[in-house]
Image (cartoon, rainbow, N blue to C red):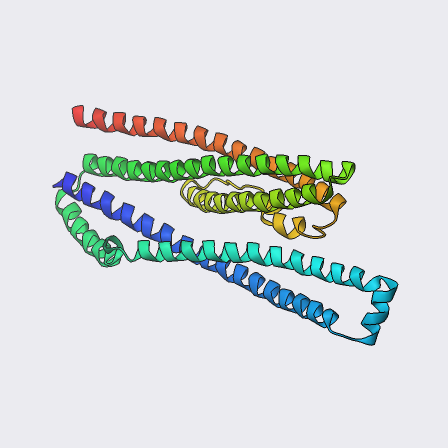
Length: 316
């Protein structure tokens, strides 16, 4: 009977922990989604204004004719188009993030709607009443000690699971960061050619193609780091340790990177600076991965200690 109660408690505790974890993730992801939607909408308004400015500049006027004769109109139009293109790049990146976060919210809601979590509160209350009744009839020091060992084992296994999920997310983040840095290496080489050697139209086109590709890879790294951050928060809750990636640089990467993107010198400088920031984030991830590995080894040792403690009691 004791083993049945212990098994039932372990199962219910694990479900309750998972439910709380998913509910917290859903709340945090909804907050991120709201913030990103606000940013996207602000960029959309800015983009609409830039588009109106271009249309307005293209309409006939005597002032426009004078500007054309003096060569200033082409310069103004070029500046307006570049400004609109910069905003469009930022808007597209924000829209990608909104889609990612919307999908994450949907996945979390579907997970919480599974049958396992439908009546967990009622099941737990019923179990506690049943366990209380059993303890009153079978109370003993040995029983309480074995129950304490069982509770500790559930706690440690829960931490091990959270650490394992975080470590796997960290490995994915490392791969995504490596891919982004590789793309930036390629863009940097082409940018150097274009900036210092005068690569011409073809090289400029190739450079912006590499920049777009780099943006996609950085976006993938942002998404992987966001998932890593979520998993680390679960570990922090379970282990009461602090695990944080200094990710601010990469999450503001596209905002800064796309400013003055059509200036050759600014592009080259931005690529070089962005590589340094990505490298710093990578070092942060590797540092935390090392800490997670050490924590996992310590928890494995604690499980072995609890198993031995239980065996000693049973065999005594």
